[in-house]
Image (cartoon, rainbow, N blue to C red; front, side):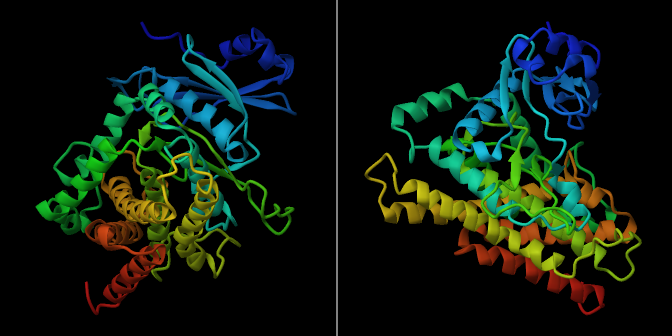
Length: 426
């Protein structure tokens, strides 16, 4: 039997019955909003004018399709991720008030004074050091939950306790299989039919299979599992706002329900894939005949260059923090040379996973506003850019030597397509 779901009235009763929570918010003065825009959870924001809580409860079905039943136990993965992040990457995690296993819900701090990163990217707003700190978050989780930071038996027990098969299956299907076949979840702008059909070539499927196999078999650390730009809060730093010090936390990471033990490169790759989608949008909007107006005052002449820098900023944040932590690695056999090897391999697979994420979000299920909020030719241009760059990454990820190679590949895609706009090549 499914757990009784809360609503905007009963959530107040729930808080009133927990002394730890009603010590945070005044239940007599609270307002409640259900703001969940994902498919798997209810999300209540409870605020009293000074303080707030976020209460997340698992749905027994997909919100957009009630006939699609899903496990309510994903909340346990959410709790594991929040507990680990609170311990190992506290600066980048929301304050966590614990799991209610019977109710299938978790409680964390309300971060309404932060902004979700994707809308900021769509609005051409620069968030300084957000990519660096997301890289640092990945490094801290990777080190502390892997064989670098724990002994073998600790990691093996943690991995066994962190299995999340139902949600892993969703990831396996949506990212690594469905986009490369004719499937009901797929849809796209008809002007990129040629690129979509080209993904069904066996050489492309072989590259996707390599990534799926890595995802399935390399359980090296506890992952966030869905680290896209709608799972990251940022702080705006406009001219009228006090800038954050460089060493302050510029991000807060949330939505851990897809967490499991997997390849560290997957979290980096999902992040990079969403950077690529933001760049696809920017490429489309740079077209002189784009019908979508730019928000007044938000167009920064350096925005495009800043977008391109995000791969390197996030990787440098990750690599520098990981090397710092790994100087105290548990396994003595892990030499400096092995750390170098591991980082190089992680970089390559990160690029491959980025390609898979960009393809899925362009033609598969659960698309993103970066492209979907565009119309007409702009949407087709963004789709073509995303699929072109992603295919090049998918074909060549194993040969990448440095993070700058990712940037160069994306820049090359833009240059080639720009010539096509001018009628020189397609």
